[in-house]
Length: 218
Image (cartoon, rainbow, N blue to C red):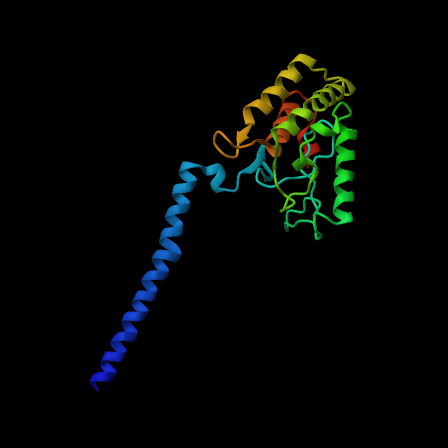
């Protein structure tokens, strides 16, 4: 009888410990950390959402396709920027398929930026990222694209009779790149920019200057 009572006490203590652990580790700690994160950095805590005039268009952490010439281009994506699943090419970098795809990416970059020589193109901007959704591109790649982006924005403004001075567009684009550059490791690291930050910045500039409307984003 004594042994049965000791066994029941042990079971009871185990259930109490289990309940406490579930409440503390499963509810209290996650809730507290979420509240702290949202208070300190609400943008990152909520997935760094892209919010344009109250509408969410994705996340700054996930690259999207920007097909117009007045946008900076993200790294190539083997999954066509499908945000429901990430993935990389299903072949080795040394295969003919991979090499041909990289050559095609190089040709596409050269066609979009005709004043750029192949020796100046950073390798990362013409090679698929591991996730297919990497939003970061080398700073050098963004600098090579600046001229095309500036000219394309100005040409669009002329086309729709909302002419914005070439000087103001140039200043805007150059400041946008310079103000968003980051280094992946202090002192010795490489410099990069988030292409989503750049292209959303361009969208905001166009909205402010009447070059596009909110309905065109949907």
